[in-house]
Amino acid sequence: MIPSEHKIQSVSEQKIVVFTDLDGTLLDHNTYSFSPAIPALQVLAARSIPVIPVTSKTLAELRPLMSVLGLKGSAIAENGAVIKRGDDSIDCAGSRSKLLSCLANLPFEIRSAMRCFCDMSAAEIATETGLDEAEAALAAQREATEPFLWGGDETELAALADALTASDFRLTQGGRFYHIIPPRDKAAAIEVLLAQKTPRPQTWALGDGPNDTAMLLAADRGALIANPHSDAKNLLPDGHQLYLSAKTGPAGWRDAIAAFLGSDFG
Image 1 (cartoon, helix red, strand yellow):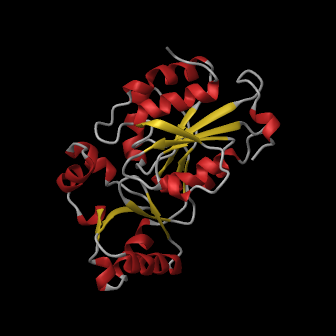
Image 2 (cartoon, one colour):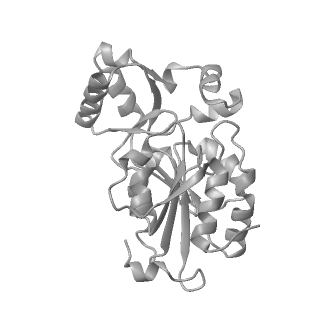
């Protein structure tokens, strides 16, 4: 993290990049609308501040969505496992076949408590996510990770985490699903993306789930967007300096960007 005196520089004094989660953050958790955030997106675009999605969504989902949101360039998908650079080159941190093999080798009592995307049809994914079937089919096109619903207890969940670690995977919790990911999370993916940026830009990060906290705490300015279904706030260390939004979803996103810019959008 850069020294605190640098954090008060205006947007005209230092290059800024905004990294944002999507579901429950820039997008409404239920409707996937981003209307309340449009004024903030417009101001950022006018000031040439790029917005880079950092999401559990797949690249197949992100490509049309970025067009709708008016975003261009880099993107981080599947909770950090997949990076699309501005030149459209892809950096994938994991192997889908290795992940499926890991799932197949889990003890029966653990695997039977999991309802993974690979266990569901597009119609079933649509029911669980609120997406339509075409969007759900895009969500199923995963390259390195697997979302799942959990039906077991805490002891079994801990055993699952241990089994995944032994196979070089990790367990993380999003705003709606648990996720199996390779050992590169959102925060680490941001570091990969920024590794060759000189000078290093100031980073702003916004998210709403436990899988976002590492990137929020690593950013120069971080915002935890309110989520009534997530306990991410309980994971924050004492003395953290994150912005905590009062509103949920894109309305909270808009308020956080306004606070970071030191201006109101009216």
